[in-house]
Image 1 (cartoon, chains in turn purple, brown):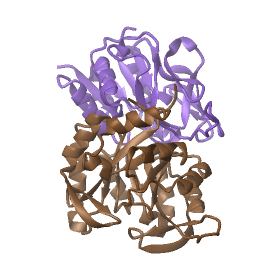
Image 2 (image 1 turned 45 degrees about the vertical axis):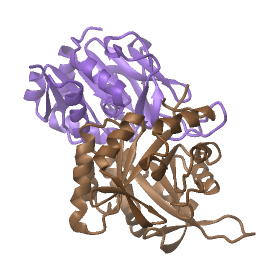
Image 3 (image 1 turned 120 degrees about the horizontal axis):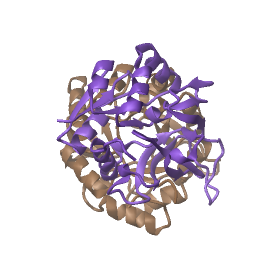
Image 4 (image 1 turned 30 degrees about the vertical axis):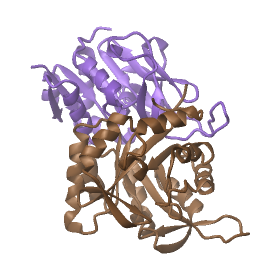
Length: 213
Length: 257
C-alpha cells in the first residue's frame, strides 16, 4: 500500500486535508506525521499550512523539519498547499521579511490595497472564494477541465523569479501564479481539500503521480 | 473571468436537528443536519454554515459530532457559529473539521477575543457575526446598531464603526444579519449591507430576510455583498441551490455553476 505523509508542524487543522486525501484515494495509507523518519519513509508528502508565515517558518526551523522538506523536495512527490506553497519560496513580505525554504526562487507578496474589478467594484482582501484556474500542461491537472474553480483564501501570493515554474494562474484582478511545479514538487495556493470534485481529483492525481512532469 | 460570488446555505441546529425560526420564534423542524448538508453539497453550495442555537451547555457536543460527520464527506468550506466564547471552543470546532468559526456575542462583550483568536488561528478562519438593527427614525440619516441575544438587547454600538473595528482586530470576514429582516422573507436590508461592505476591506456575507431568488441577486448587485446566506428558502426545498445560482448568473453575477 502506498503511503502519503501529511506534515503536522502545529500550523492549523490537518483533519480536513487528511480526510480529503483518504476520500480521494481509499487505497492509500494517509498518515499525519510530525517526525523526520515518517516523512522520509512515506511515498509522497503533503505540506499544508494556514496562518502566518513567520510562525510557520519558526515551527519548521525549530523542529528541524525545514531540512526534511528540502530533502523531500529532491527525492519524492511533494505537494505544498496554501501557506505550504508560500513557504517554498525564497522569502515572504508577511511579518516584515520572513525567509522561506527557497525551493522555488522568488518572493511572496501581499495583494495591493484598493484593487478593483473591471466594473469598478472594490476587490476584498483576503481573496476568498471560488476562482478560475488557468492550467498549464501537467499530470496533476489530469481530468480537471480548464478554467475550473477552486477555493481560495489568502492575502499574499507567490511571485516566482522563473515563469517556467508556473503551473497555473488565476486573475485577481491581474494574473498571479496559483500553482507552481518543478520536477517532483507541486504547490497550490488554493485548497484542493475544500474544492469539492475538482479538488479531490487533483489530490487523486497527486496520489498516483510518479513525480515526473 | 473572476472570483465568483458565493451562496451559503445556513443550518440552524438545535440539539442536533436543523430548525429555522421566524424572527427567532416559531421554530420549524427541517431535518437531519448531515443529510441536509449532503444535499446542499450535491446541489453546488459554495460553503455551508452551521449556527448552533442549542441553549443548554450540556448538549453542545452534538454540534461537534455533526461537524465531524459532515467534514468527513463534504469537501467545501464549513463554518460553525453560535456559542463560540473561548480559544478552546475554536480549537474544538477546527479539530472537528470546521474551516471557520463565527464569533458573535463574545466579540461584543470582549473585542480582544477576536484579536487573540485571529493571532492564534489566523484571520482566514475568524468570521465576526454582526446582528444589526436600524435605529434611525424616518427623516433621519440611516443608522444601525448592533444587537445581542438574538436581536433583543441593544448595545448602543454603531454597526458600521463596529464592523471596521472588528476588521482591524483581525476578522477575516463579516457575516452581517439584519435583525429587522431576519425571518421576514422581505429581502436583505440592502442599504445596511452596502454601507458595511463599502466600509470594510474584507468579504461581507449578507444575511437575513431572503424570500426569493431576486433577493439573493439584489444582495450582490445593490448590497455589494461578496456572499449571500439563506436558510429557509433552501431547507423547505422551495428552491435548490443550483436554481439560485442559475438565477444569479442570469442577472449577470459571476457564479460557480
